[in-house]
Length: 250
Length: 354
Image (cartoon, each protein chain N blue to C red):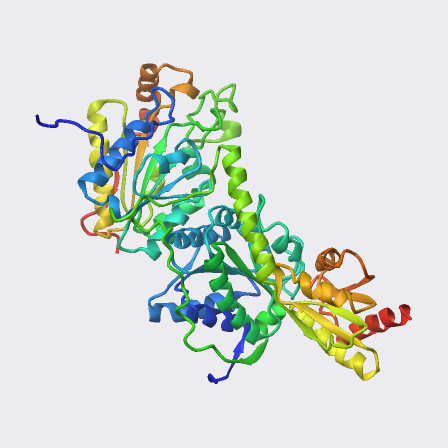
């Protein structure tokens, strides 16, 4: 009997702790499929963030390091400098990457650090129970913006791919979504391209994945995906923001 | 005997790190440790090492965490305000059982403080180098040669016990020049690190470097195991120098730069017929309790001399269970005590006890 589908080998059998309808599971699977297809699980070290994906080391079967909040790009830098021929990736949420870890993100990018970042943007702090994130939309209600994010006091969301695409060290920056099957397929292609760029030593690569948080958005999983399409995608347009994967950054 | 060369303390520590097999340094500029970075940025490109000037102290210590996770010898260097910024990373390194070496070339504090030599970070180094229940190994050299020797020892012991080691120096030691020689053939003392996260290659199980334990019982067990290791270290790794202690009636206790001055004062006091010696801790954690207890059995009183308002004095009193009077003399804010001042304090102690 032909096998038409199976769980990627780079994912463990541990049951995911994520909430029902959360898209972390899909994104984990895409990363693991890419590790399998590129045959790099054995030479990969992943860096887990602080946030919902803090226990990513239980799910990915490659070697893993758990980083302090926001510091994953710095930890990945140390790993990569010690292991230049291994594959190093971080898996970070929006608070981790675009608030407390902004400096580490920007400087790893501008150094052209040859690492890959999987950036999960769901516009909210999930693990701590739904506070405003750097990517929370204007007017969006969260636990700490109970009247909606007021741009007069809380300022504006950060568009990470746009910001990083201005830096010379970035070889590849693409924003994708996992709200529907065609977008999931595109997301996987982007993740594969990012890892491939790293293997070919082209420079810093990041894939921003627009995703949902039904629990903290207070919506059902399907409503959440529709909310993502209606509200997040207009503010965070999908697409390739930087592609120097042919020539490399140096 | 290896060749003796004249070197600045900071540069000697940097060269010692290279010779101890360190090829990964992550730092951020701060006075008065800058020569460490400058030296390594010059040497590493020529010998295949990584010198990386990080965007912050916070990033630098986390790069050390990454490199240490990969199993290589990694080092960072800073001075007091920068060490405060690194404290998050130091806690994670300790919680993840990772070895590394951290240099603190102390300057005056608190806050931005000043840039002159100080020993005001003793409490930070020995009590709370970061949040949580943990210790780091703390070495306190008092000569440039000892800076070299303790760098080798710090890397070896950090690897042996899988924990961070700190060299607690100060601006005076960092900036002074003295002749040093480097031990030959000591670079290959690195232990195998089967726990390293460097790609399993399908040859072993997954390695995870982690400090998160959501189950309190598991976390308590982890911390207890670490403290069993600490208890072993307290038994076997204490280091102290005893100077003119054989017949001493009084003991000065000082470390690092203060100990150099105290030593001069002890010699001067001896010339005046006062039977005083010096106990100089070389390890601050573990604190050389044995040497202090030995001294307490013999002397009538102690004088603790520090470049702070009095921090190590706590450990002196604890070590001897307050069984003898412990006087204190300190200068702070970047002021270095003079041998004359310390001699005056020795006379007060000796006179007062008659």
